[in-house]
Image 1 (cartoon, rainbow over the protein chains, first blue to last red):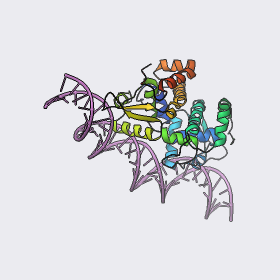
Image 2: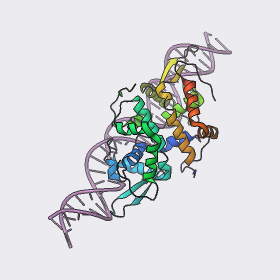
Image 3: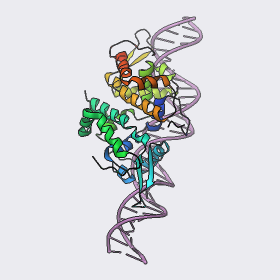
Image 4: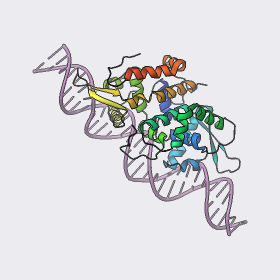
Amino acid sequence: MAKKPLIPRRSPCPLNASVEMLGDRWSLLILRDMMVWGFQTFKEFLGSHERIATNILADRLRRLEKSGIIASKPDPSDGRKQIYVLTAKGIDLAPVLAEMVLWAARHEKTGNQQLIRSLKGNKEQVIAHIRKTWAEQQNPPRKP
Amino acid sequence: MAKKPLIPRRSPCPLNASVEMLGDRWSLLILRDMMVWGFQTFKEFLGSHERIATNILADRLRRLEKSGIIASKPDPSDGRKQIYVLTAKGIDLAPVLAEMVLWAARHEKTGNQQLIRSLKGNKEQVIAHIRKTWAEQQNPPRKP
DNA sequence: CATTTAACTTGTGAAATGCAAGTGAAATAT
DNA sequence: ATATTTCACTTGCATTTCACAAGTTAAATG
């Protein structure tokens, strides 16, 4: 499973590998949109609250795909659309996102209290739900 | 505990709050150096494998302090040195770092196998050790 | 008292980001 | 069938951030 990076890493540290793939202002938000909201298309990501620019979104989707975290395929029912899906590697990030949400909820004033309550109550179940929903080769998820 | 951000957030989402505080190429590495290696001074951070530039390091330490994740105080035994310590909020990030390390270890070829082994074997104990080592108002940690 | 050390700041060019506008293929409406 | 709209981008450009090298200042050390 463990693959070599396409560009050489600054260091062999595993945390550094994560930071090099995810350490920017948008990548994790795109993954949140997929895990929490079931977003799958360019337009859906664009509609997110943080208002990513189109060129940045295109770049981040490309980079996440190169990192093997997401994959894309044409929508069979609409030739204009690309459908973006989480790979196993991407699904595996759910615990990271969960801990980041819980940390912020503990120390900052935030919204999305429903998500926070369900994570506090049963983190493993929330993660299992994301896993099940996105199990590869399966159909689009729906909003929770 | 939950404080208002000094600058307005792009959105009220908790993950966005985390990303705005930690979503860059260096902040999490500085926290790793504190948690894993017990680093506490500017010079120690500079010595890290990824080779951060001095101006970036100064900026990140300032931002982490403004976010309440670290705190600084002059070294009583050397007036030139600042000592940087993790706050409770910073210590609370240990599970986030742990999950990021475990994720990278699962999907990338990385070094630091000893840390990975101990995290795989007993994540909670590793986190508890970080907590204990950095408990506030206590003395400098030593390398593990 | 001269030198070294620690923690920075400053200057400069390169790269990344953000915004607005434009493009082309495919779908939908007329 | 053709005109319009939608979708997923790309391009151009101004602004911000980053990275590298060099310089500064106060405190410690020889």
